[in-house]
Length: 469
Ligand code: ADP
Ligand code: MG
Image (cartoon, rainbow, N blue to C red; front, side, top):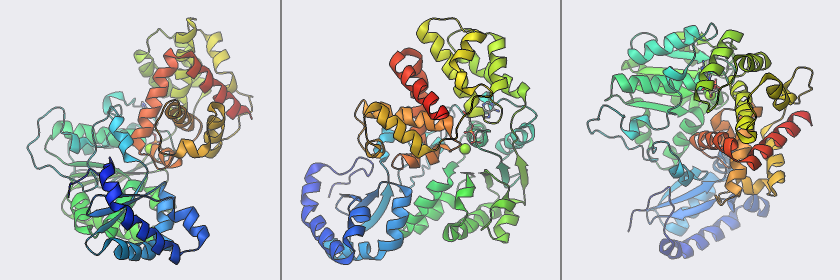
């Protein structure tokens, strides 16, 4: 039987071969669960079959967990009945094929391929830098009072992994540069030690990988994947909070890496002591190495970050405009960047030179005294969908046709600008899309806004109406 690539789905002829088995599967399932559960949960799983493995794709992380929790055994049974005992059952989420479109390096497949080939020194082999975001390197990280210690520690770890601070635990609020530093460590280490294996993983990915490995009885591969890497970069560990099974597994991963002198770097939006369900044994390990925080940037750092961004802009931006923006946004670097983007986009679209009064006009809704309302991702998605004439389901669905895809990208961009959500969390709001997809969408919208008036107007109007509703 042909081996199909799991991210592309099986070719049609295989789909037709499997139809009878799938029908049988659905019959068995329908007999086992209530019609409500069938409709809400099971029917929305999208099957694909490659002759050896039945893959069920859930629309979201939450959906997957629910299905496995409540109906895992039934599904396994139905798979056995319909497909026989030789077929493996696998769960997955979202729509990984979308990643293929990105300018980023390809990511390893679920089977966790690890190359043993010697590496060319630059650029690092794709599988080793998988999931690192190129923009997030040390050279693009502005050091200031608020992040000096964290960035020095990150640099030290990248230069001598497993030596100085192990684990390195970085905590701080959203939008202050944790993910940026993690990626920077990965890139720097690979530059210095091209043969090293670096693994960046969000805690959500670690979790789904773990679940799948159990399902597929591939725990040995999972262990090989995470316990032999030279540097493990685990982002947003707070999402493990409350999930006992994964905490247990991570405890073993941690010990194994630590004992063999491998570097572990962890980020979290809070201090380990505020990760409430963490057992003391894990919490104390987090504190074994170096614990450091990132604070909101002071005004000089904000200005330095804006100047750095301004260097990449196509036009000159007067210092007083940068100062104005630096004074406007204080506690989230993401918003700071968003404000600058709006100003430069407006200027390049209208041809109007950037000036203080113009920036004030463009950023009206951010001015002090302007009552701005907190919005969440569902509100943003609903508003964006409505503005483009789509339904929320379409935005969360698999189709990548234009202009739907653009609308989805705009919604992702707005989520980034208006909420504290991390990239993986934003991805989860759109039918479990990967964080690199979100990253790509944000960059895309940023650049399209500079050249496409309609997109700029849409984004600005949505931004304004979301803030001031
Ligand atoms: P977190 O992971 O803490 O939520 P991110 O690492 O995603 O934050 O940072 C948000 C945005 O701010 C990113 O675009 C990042 O590049 C930028 N950023 C954060 N800190 C800095 C810094 N010190 N210098 C330059 N850019 C920064
Ligand atoms: Mg982050």
